[in-house]
Image 1: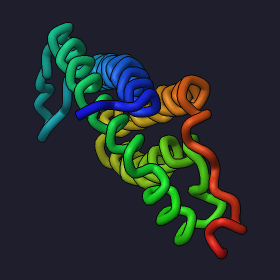
Image 2: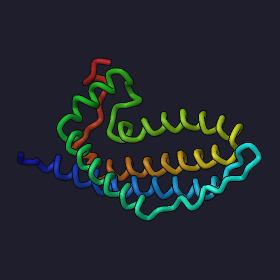
Image 3: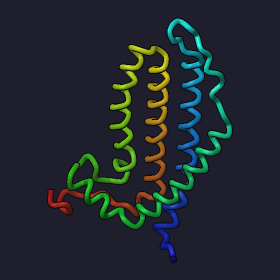
Image 4: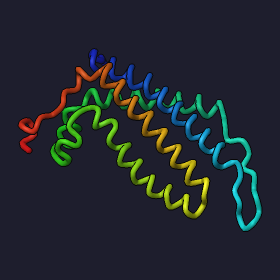
Length: 167
């Protein structure tokens, strides 16, 4: 199978930024867990959770981020017009360009997760704070991920106008 320039660049940059984003997300999650959840109190017993930091986990996340990023880059290069057409048809201006396609799902997930983490904080204290820090870190990382990808390959993925979707 011969890849065109759009597919090659999409696969390359999604793999690179996917690896960096996945490793950074794992690092933030591990640090948040170690800062806020070094032990838990269950039934009056303080139970140490031990060290949660693992360099191997970060490397594993980077590898899988690169692999899944390359796959997603190829899929996007082949089916972007169908994907963006579908999302812009049903979500209109909220999902009509590459940045929104890459970032807005994380915003929705963050808002829903923040509700759960807020409730967890009320009942489990620091465990909820660890979740909030982890989710906020992921949101920031994915914002820069989307911005960097748009800067590198955005010329291949035009925004959809309302005239082209009939909305």
